[in-house]
Amino acid sequence: MKSLTALDQLIESLRCLPGVGPKSAQRMAYHLLQRDRNGAQHLAMSLQNALSRIHHCLKCNNFSESEVCDLCASGKRDAHQLCVVEMPTDLLMLEQTQTYHGMYFVLMGRLSPLDGVGPKEIHLDRLLKRAQDGEVQEVILATNYTVEGEATAHYVGELLKARGLKVSRIARGLPMGGEIEHVDIGTLAQAMMERRSLR
Amino acid sequence: MKSLTALDQLIESLRCLPGVGPKSAQRMAYHLLQRDRNGAQHLAMSLQNALSRIHHCLKCNNFSESEVCDLCASGKRDAHQLCVVEMPTDLLMLEQTQTYHGMYFVLMGRLSPLDGVGPKEIHLDRLLKRAQDGEVQEVILATNYTVEGEATAHYVGELLKARGLKVSRIARGLPMGGEIEHVDIGTLAQAMMERRSLR
Image (cartoon, rainbow over all chains, first blue to last red; front, top):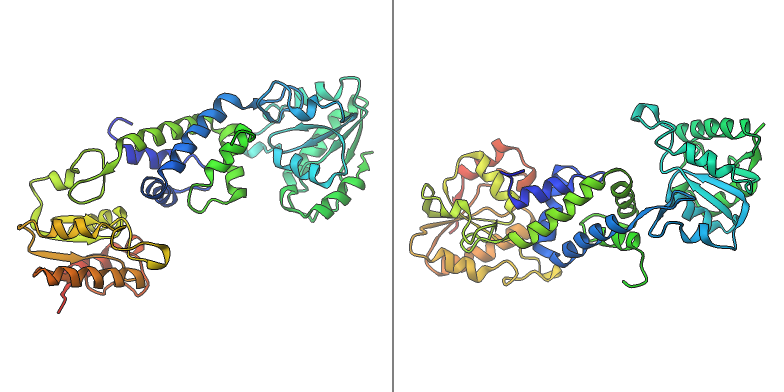
């Protein structure tokens, strides 16, 4: 890094952002330096702030600034239901449907052996422990209806059923290959209400 | 900003990047926090570093960490020629053609009245002063062959000619509507060599 200029370093650093190649990174660096130095300053501070303050909730594994996130700490949620989702966005989408009032567990990914994402990477040991807290009576698998999301649901479902838990899957109201993040609220609400028990 | 969480703040801050909307910003924030905290740390530091160290060269107006950039400070360049480009990338592309050995002036933009970019924003006062240093004998206008680039070349050319300077324009070897940054080196080299005097 020693021989790189500050500009080259900035361009190189911007490439850690997903979907940003060399040309985009260069365009971003020029834009920030030329037109939006305030924005760049805010971004630098927000990054530092987020890195130091954001960790994972001990209960649901979602991003959280406190040890246990607001949703898990809330006394108003139904502790008998545990909904498993891939990403924080999926949780937010489900909350918007207002059809579910239980707890969550966020995998922060999905099983994908080719990308090196196995049971450990999606924290299945913590999920199994969480699901067996004595209060949870039903685990609702709300992973995407993609190949990887389905495989994850199947794998997780088998593990949970082997431990005597009732496991359900949100209804296939979603189109095949669709992702929870991008579906409309109505379809998602129907899928939540028509969840079916895994036999 | 007080009621926003650190995560919301980060997502909001990422939107200062050109071409990044709400969904992309969210995806970037999750990616950084979940998979690339080191990258985020580097990005924050590079931003701070760039903001504090990168300014504009007093002679050519390009980004520079010193008062006068390496190219302007070099004794090997022909001080009789001054090439005017829109952006730093254009300068880099011209250098790659190895057909030009004079000095540069970087406008850091192009005339665009609808976007509020006038003569002041592209530093024309400094360009005029730079071109009249007594050494410059020819000003080569290498703005893009887009509508705005052409208008800029025309406007700048008239001002320079009124001051008795010889003004030329890189040849129309570039395709209409094309941008210097994206053209192939061969075409750009031809355009540089076939520059024509403005009458």
